[in-house]
Image (tube, rainbow, N blue to C red; front, side, top):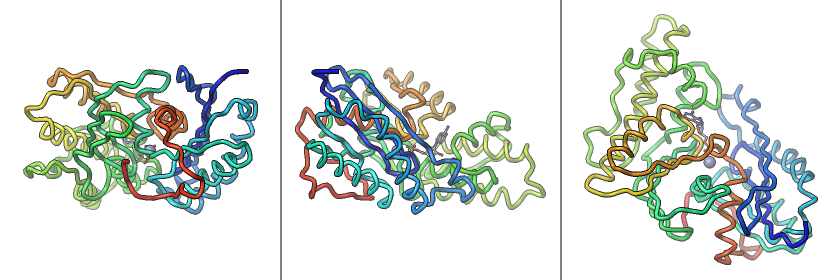
Length: 334
Ligand code: KG4
Ligand code: ZN
């Protein structure tokens, strides 16, 4: 393993403990492991931050043990420091600082959302400019990205995020956490037009998103039922998913009206949604744009995307002194 230049990356912004080792020269992913806590949070209907932090404290060292063979070739340690849950981010950042001090390595703090953008480029060259839809549990954004340092936020949500709305609907239907995959499965067996939910902000000229009203419409629909049986769950899932995605498509059309798009990407945990991907294929066809998606295993939170993003941060010399690496729950591109 002599002569390699490697980055070790750590991700712990929410409920996934993950570590990767990426080769700088050719972007090859040499090691990647993720321990997901989904099942442990499921009975609470969402992520419990304190529990997540405790689980990271045991899962991260367990994964780190498996990366020891790479230690002598590491050139930097990268870690997600924002945005995310403060108590879980701290677990990754403290581990990164301890590794940096003990191995004498510089640190690269990485923005989690930039990590999602780079999930499109794992083991590949980056491709900019890129227009993007970022849909995760915490964010719903339209972005124009020219490069690592040039991320322009074109639209965001006024309240809940796209992924979060699936989680909340799932909870109301008694289907557990995370909601995205299970609501998507139920939607397959449901009648898409059984419930006619209103598309949020459809008459507003604003290019922004809102999901709290749709969540309320679903709540009222459930309350109006005599019995919430499996078919009703499927019909609500299908009608809700159609409306939630229609909202994204309507606002994308507004955002890019009269504008050309060459490359359009969709990233974030909820970008795994098959119905969303189908609708985006239609949107990109109309705009004569190429649609870029990440491999399904890299849509949800993972350290491979953080490591890939860190290669560009490394090349740009984005190292930070240990005492200057603060964690932040906020969304800041910069
Ligand atoms: O990016 P991610 O792993 O974590 C955050 O950074 O938030 O995204 C997780 C979110 C959850 O809200 C989950 O329900 C949603 O992504 N999600 C989906 C699907 N798979 C995951 N939402 C809709 N459809 C899916 N197939
Ligand atoms: Zn994420």
